[in-house]
Amino acid sequence: MRYIPVIFGVVLIIYGLIDCLRSEPSEVRSIPKPVWVLVIVLLPLIGVILWFFFGRPHYAPAASARSGSVGRPGPHRAPAPVAPDDDPEFLRNLGVSREQKLEAERLRKLQAGIEAREAKLREQELHEKKQHDDKLHEDHPNDEPKH
Image (tube, rainbow, N blue to C red):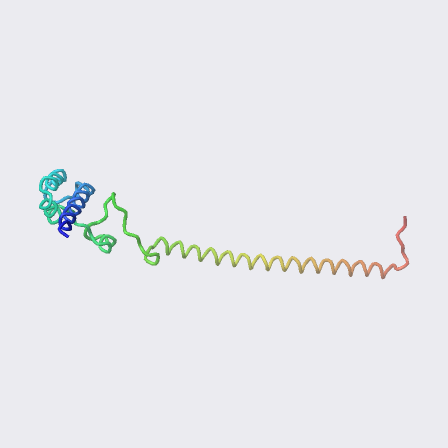
């Protein structure tokens, strides 16, 4: 039980030091980043507490970072993810995809109509040719082809 405060202090110092080292130098408040590292190392517990209150950068919540107000994401941070129904590019692609599907369906129907008309015309041609052949055969029933 008596080691818990010591373990907590060591974990807090390590976390504070890593946080200081990973933060961008331009975002560190009060004094320069290398000085903060020295303060944390030379004044372990007090230095970490000072770092958290006076030196640590203010990170904007995700909602305000997305809206572009306080704490805009810089080039080193990716913008917050956007829900699909809020993403204009996604909605645009969805509209284009829907239009393409409707156009493809319209073209399929037109193709089916053309194929049906062609089949009907072929059938009419065959029927007319057969009628024509039957009529020729009626006009000259005894004529047999000569060899």
